[in-house]
Image 1 (cartoon, rainbow, N blue to C red):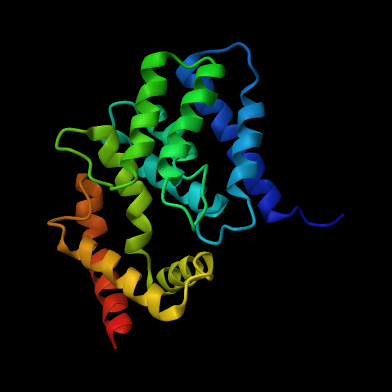
Image 2 (cartoon, rainbow, N blue to C red):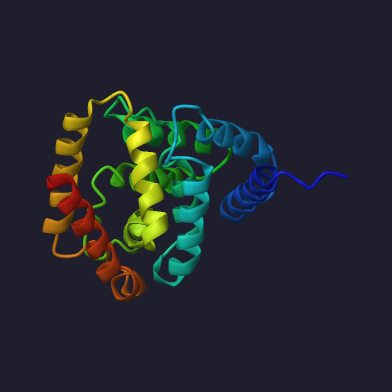
Length: 220
């Protein structure tokens, strides 16, 4: 018997995680949460993606689990993670807004309350800037989980850089380097990349080191 495909196992685990999260937030009953899980997983597996894939989704969900104690409503944050890059085209600038609108339509249809649906959409839109306001505990957790890749070990960060470049393969090299450098400069100018105590303690220093190293290479 052939060994199971790791990607199939990952997708099955993700389907179950989405269903469990949706049911925990809205309660039992129709419609079937797996219908929405399958639609989202199909979106996350689109061919134009190299970094914004199901692997990124899984990583963000795992980081949310790590940071869950800092959230007011961790399951709503998890739903926001599912939707935050559900619409993704690297050649467009309105991905977060379109993802938020998808969340509003899908979660309303799936039986989530209006209040929680609005909160999921708000969190999705927040990933445009990752600028969670002071006291926005759920926003801080989602943004920190999404940016945790910046604090990766050297090999993982190099793979992240490569995947991002592949997603923007249609952009000429000089233009990409200038745009990427501008993004890194904006991040490094922030007083802090992370907001939750765990992320500040465990990820801030490594993330700044990685960003500085990449920026130096782009300027060389």
